[in-house]
Image (cartoon, rainbow, N blue to C red; front, side, top):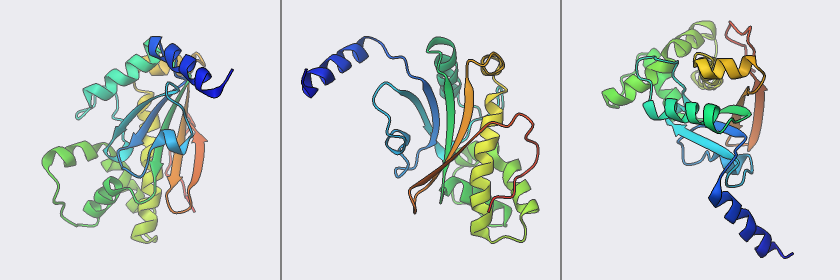
Length: 199
């Protein structure tokens, strides 16, 4: 069977239904395409992209209804096996948050600022714990810590927590370095309570 015929059959089956194994949260930065980074094919992942790659806690003010719906659909209906949150270097959203904590005023709208409030406390902690680091280093730490925050927030969704407890779903983090094209990853630590010292 030639390649074209195999692809045709694949897309015909895909058109009928899809059974992705992954739910991926990624920044909407045009340089960060999670499917290209992870070499995923059509039908392998449900992807939710937003500013800062942030996942709000269940019922939290500023929660995006479409993100909630995507999580519920992926977990309850599609029964994905993995949820992956991907942060990245030079994230403009995280830099905006860090600049605010360094006293700089933002030119962004109230809608933009309200959305970023999800990561506000995390950025404040990073600035306090890593005050001796440069602004750029603090941003790198904060990018990773906001990924950890999003992973923890996922557990506030009852159906996600239930699936994780039943070992039907695992939650993972990824961090993409655009300069080196390196991809670091780690899994959710349920006992995680402190800001990590990233080097």
